[in-house]
Image (cartoon, rainbow, N blue to C red; front, side, top):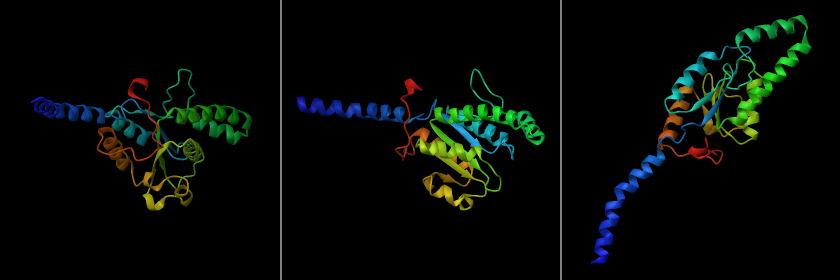
Length: 203
């Protein structure tokens, strides 16, 4: 009789356990942080970052946008600053260009340090140095990098295939949004040991 009662209790607990597991699987990425890497000097990268940030806000992911840095004591990297830097470079005022860019570089690399994962948008036809440094900097730290290539994965520079697991190279940003939403909901597993997320209470 005792065994029958125990079996009955176990059966009644199963829906509760399933519910608890479902709750734990949801919102895995809430309050995580991603840094948005992409060209700024030779191509305006504001629009795609704003669109992506809006989509990520739906699942509670915080996006670090270099156009809108989150630091209390900040450094400006808007289009106006870029124009000023170009003028200074044209005038041959290299000391001032270096002074400003060293600060910008330090702040931007600091954001890669603080990010839980990286989303990078690369146009192979546009020359970029900062974006590549940020990608390789993040890669050395073994961060998860979602790399989007303008024109599709088949246009990805060959060197990047040797640096980043190619399963993280995508054709467009919509593919990355879909994958991140599936990870957040628990539909897709975090399939890399590069994921090292803090527990929700510590984010």
